[in-house]
Image (cartoon, rainbow, N blue to C red; front, side, top):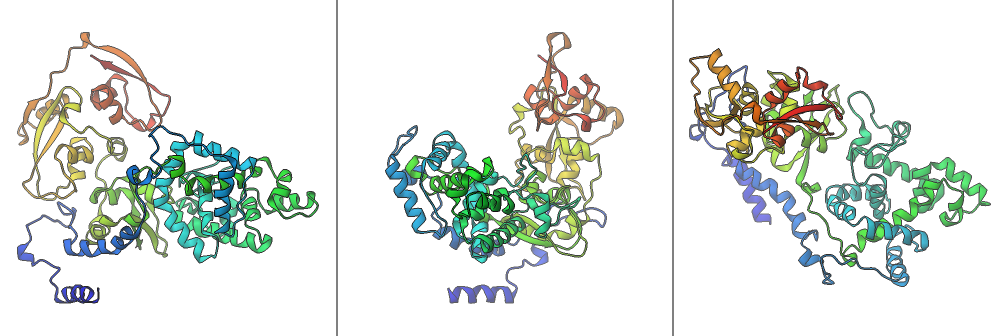
Length: 515
């Protein structure tokens, strides 16, 4: 290992990681436009970055392979059940290895039945999401000398959903109320709500529990106070005659809190004995060790990042949930930006381009068109489309080309099997447009260089079509609806006299003509 580190250091010092300028292909860049494609990260540097996490994966016992996890050889549809003695024995083992007072009783059993039987699929998702959040929880809990098993409390609180909001308006993974968040120095304003920041909220949760433990000296009462507040716990202690055991004061606590600690014990049990219940994790798309953090020193919008790097605004929002308006504000203090590991180098290499990028078309239209789940094949596109060839010119990049044609950047990448936003001058791109748009182009620009190559299918005449009513659902976009009914976005807008797509909302009814 020492020799390897010395070799890497020698390579860095000698400059062998960098390719001479003469050996690089020519890419366009103008003062007013971003370069045609992003500057790719050095492959050797990428390899060194990968070494930072490889050791974790070598020693991690996480897997979603049921062939390995199904140690009891259960049938796929088997739902094992156990006696009270078995449950009590297993929870006794949890108690022996934790400062938290794990106890088994009828109330706990009721919640075990809930999580291990009725919510089996839910627990599979929790086992997978644990790989994204639990390393952060454990590191912070350990720093504040709080039992690591308290990490399971976040499942009871939010189902590991960073955007969770309760009926009482508690928010985030750890469900902080506005007032409590402010008490623990969390920033909550028009642009930022740190109750949704997994890192910042976990620190606040640990600080709160540390304060409660200093008050009660009992972790079960700490959890009760986390749910009901210390005022309600203190009232329950007084009404019980001064008892300080959770089970002794449970009847005097608010109804929701009476089930809070039993639910926590049940979740902890199922997470530790999931294989015994034939429950296995769903593979998470992102894990904690696949992410990294950059500190940003000027204002930055999500659409600036998404336009240059291979990431959607939806994913940026998921990784950075505390930014309420998809803007990272800057007022002098560095701001955190979480990205997948593989994009860290790309961001650093292209940060000037990213910070200087600005949209050049209607942002409302772009927002509706950009969608990750788009048609994968030409055959899935709406009827009446025309295939065009676009030749990349100096100063052009994927998002700009997409806006010029009124399609999404993701569509262009899918149609051309592009893995990144990286383009070269002279590169040919396939674009599919509604026939009406092509005719309009010809009328507006009879000398256009881009010529339609072929039609996928002639539009059927109106008298063979029928009109149906579609009710817009939450999350629907015009792109989704157009793909579903195999029509174009322009057709939908024409049939319904839509001039402002921003005004569409769930519950609205629109007409669709289908053949």
